[in-house]
Amino acid sequence: MSLERTLTVRVERISRQTPEILAFELAHPWGRPLPAYEAGAHIDVHMPGGFSRQYSLARAPAASNAGTYVIGVKREAGSRGGSASMHERVREGDLLPISAPRNTFPLREEATHHLLLAGGIGMTPLLAMAQALAARGAAFTLCVFARSEEHLAFADALRDPALAPHLRLHLDQGGLGDASQRIDLRALLAERAPGTHLYVCGPGGFMQAVRDASTHWPEDALHAEYFAAPTDANTTTGLPFTLKLAQRGITVPVAADQTAVDALHEVGIDIPVSCQQGLCGTCVVEGDGEGAEHRDFCLTGSERRHKVALCCSRAKGLELVLQL
Ligand code: FES
Image (tube, rainbow, N blue to C red; front, side, top):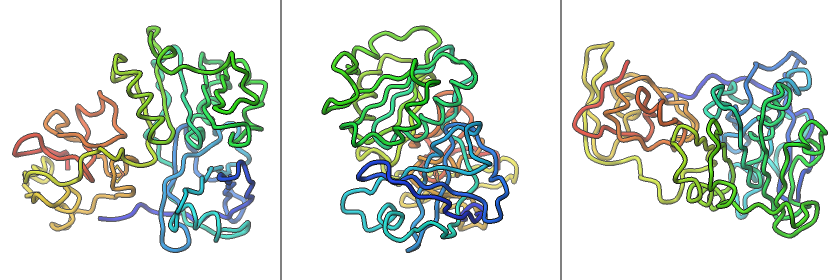
């Protein structure tokens, strides 16, 4: 398996957003614009200590400052890995390797209304989406859930008058959000106006609550960005099967305790990977999605008909055909 090509950025500015969240502005070391991206995109950040994590870009490209990126990093309780490394070891002026942006959480052009549900640090991709939608005059609602005003990240960006008419704040402990703004998820999602697409990002419990309240929504209208695979997710192992590589005209066996990526690597075919949990979309290839047991969290219902995330998904039966 292989990692994607990296580029090096300089940490231009670090700003505290909440007691647990820092924002990092990343710039090209020589001041050039960083590669373009669409709202909803994320990057891999390779940080001191050998850790690598995915972070969403928290600012719409049009609002971007001379082609820089902004990410928000929440220090997870008890972390000795990625988030602790970013909080403790990264300083302004440091150089960091990152991947180019990838977008597995794009805005859907077919939507007539966009409902953006952000829980805590899950605000980052949805803030970029809200800014992009406001810039193009699209119909949208941004619902932000946070513990309190003190725990509200990117509050300055949320105060932008362009977002104000579209913003609903739910603060568990009161504050900015008056009681009339409290959001009842079940009531909010009870009825779906035709053409509305729902986008959600946040901690596991919040994602589950949204999933539970939207079971009657069509699958293609639901879009979720996960930080980690849900704890009840299937493991990457299962029954053995065979990959049939249509372009090469060969078959590759996948053992019960192997992923498709591992099996392909053994025969000299490297598939780029990053999260290895079905979250980021790096390992997705074209293939017979109908014949796959999909275990990812990044493909939509319609994409699953012709795409497969090879780090986690397996064949439904004995064989899975890929366009490789
Ligand atoms: S490597 Fe991230 S989805 Fe497979």
